[in-house]
Image 1: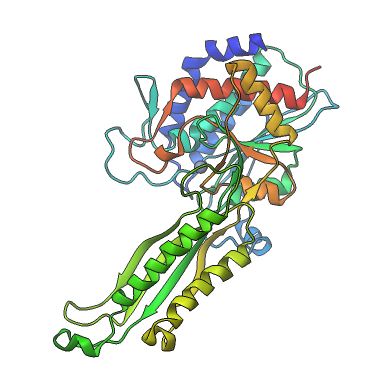
Image 2 (image 1 turned 60 degrees about the vertical axis):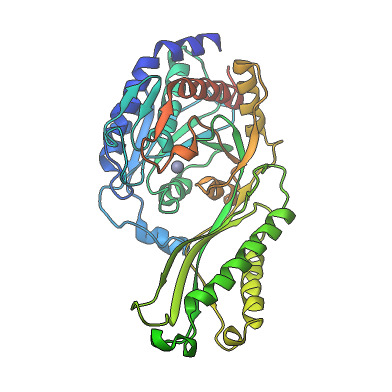
Length: 412
Ligand SMILES: [Zn+2]
């Protein structure tokens, strides 16, 4: 593998430029077409067999009722590039999403123009996850350039719609099967064997309107919500104390957040209703229905203790994204394969941990394909202004991936 690593180093500058170019093609969810054409062209140039197609969104919606946020637009293509092996080896899928989130405010760099400065590449998508796509492409390219003959097949998937719930990955799954999959989401070079589930919900709290001058005659939905919020915090602490998981060492691995509140319609009227929207983090070992039920029970119990809420209970609706958690055993071949490659390059043991965010990993695991996330960059920088990819990490991830492909698919 020495030769492969040398090729990766020789091609560093080209890889950085590729990432800058890719960032410079804006590809917010729903508008992935142009960036997908660009990567398809590069895949052909390095000698992969390329297929592009537009997932049938309507058909997908029917097969997977959980998908509710589909951007129904023309030109949303998935791209796959295949490197056929000599035969007799296992097939590895390397997956990354091309869609990115909107830029938002507060940038010191141009979000839609890749900029390299002091060992970092800045721009929207630098780490989530055009950098991941660049690491896959240049890992495969280096194996080819160094004339490594693989036994098994390598399938590179550049998919659409991860940020809306996994449209592209699901569609690719209907076409391609593998013995394992690696998603190059930013994990700071940790091997992610688990991902948290995330359920979004809405609470509706009722009160009773009255004029401010006689506010005692009304019931403020905002004040009632304060009780509910305190109960949620107690429930969250109790859950996080109880739900120990070896892959999660964070202090609050399974948080519950109220992210949005709407209430009241006039300065001098007691608010008679409040809506609170939030996100409920689920451990990989929890059953979603049981977790939901325990949350609903906690709300019910809190209401029973209050004279007004007992008669006007708070309602819980599960709406929007309902992402299931997923995990695989650290003993799985794909985990061991990445670990071996990582150690042979860095001389260190890799960190294995669960991710507190959701991604397409769960879709592979639900379909019986062992999947991990492994990639350069920090998810804390994703969806933020001045998102960046550290160049040295990108090169390291590329080397580890190349070694993993050879290890997993076998070399003849
Ligand atoms: Zn991502």
